[in-house]
Figure 1: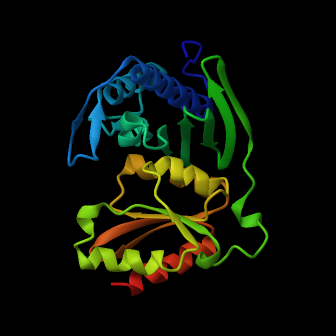
Figure 2: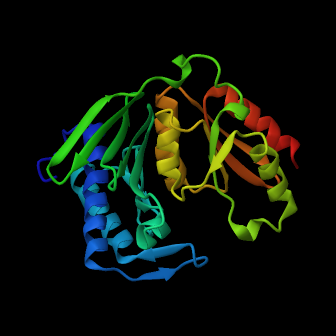
Length: 272
């Protein structure tokens, strides 16, 4: 990572930082970690979360000293460039700590010209990057990274997967919201129309699967910027659509092929 400089392109900076953060967190997990709860027992933070975020923050201070930075674990750097990095070096911390499912390191860069992003999944070695409106899928490990090739565009896929009843949906609804009818009903209205449902516990992992066609659509309410922007960038750059829709008094974030997002928007609005 020390070979990176202020002249390094954003795609390579984003990918390298996501990989470095993910590999650091994975090493710390192997060495043993404890966790503490934040909002609830499933919302945890570990020393790896904080250490990986500090790694990214310090490298951005060196590589992009004029850019703003926002991190899930408290990083807040004011910028002077009109650009902002939004970082979540351990997304899916409950999975990360418990071994219950996938996790990743994710970050996005907001610029006047659009979004750049990177999502690195250490357990599989997959690396997704976005820059200049192009989404790519590659790989990385301790020996380095390969940016790979451009993702097949979602808007070029043959017709036949333009109905929710023909695709899988990625989503999440915390048990505490099941008792809130105004939120549960729109969610149920959408879920009932899907061919099948998956909840993996990491928004950026799920959105990367939508971007590369392994899942059809994604939706969740009250999504934080660090859980939304990296995957949003991937899906849009891969030719998909994204939207934010108010229903049940909360804002739902949606992503997938455009016809699916349109259908899902109607179901959420109609399910109140």
